[in-house]
Length: 146
Image 1 (cartoon, rainbow, N blue to C red):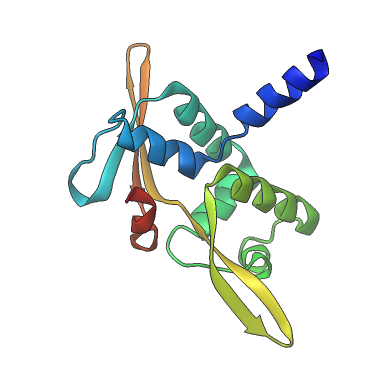
Image 2: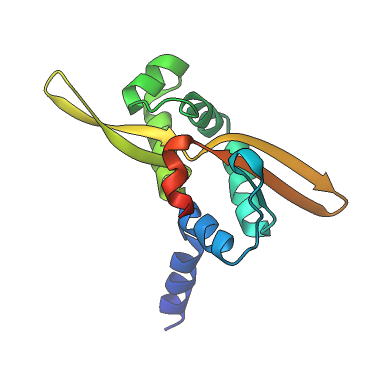
């Protein structure tokens, strides 16, 4: 019984980041600014974003896909990161909602997902004990704000 409660709690904590941001936006926990900048004050969300950008491989993947959608092989080719580690981090970024599948690339009899970072640009604001993250989403990701 205790194991089931632990599994339920763990599953609840694995909420996808894009869903979390959308929910917070609807609850007015962040404020829309000009030019599609959003301020995120929710501690858990700020922590998850900063944790992803604190990981070297994840940061390189997110920066590489901030402007243009790329396939995993294109990301690896562009960044020269280790193959297996990069695929593992890409899977985690997709699970967290920071990396989105936005289409497919069909080349040489293979179909690969094109990936685009949710966040195009980010700023961190520290005021005393309060940390806020300002994010600017990609134009392609405007639908997530609706």
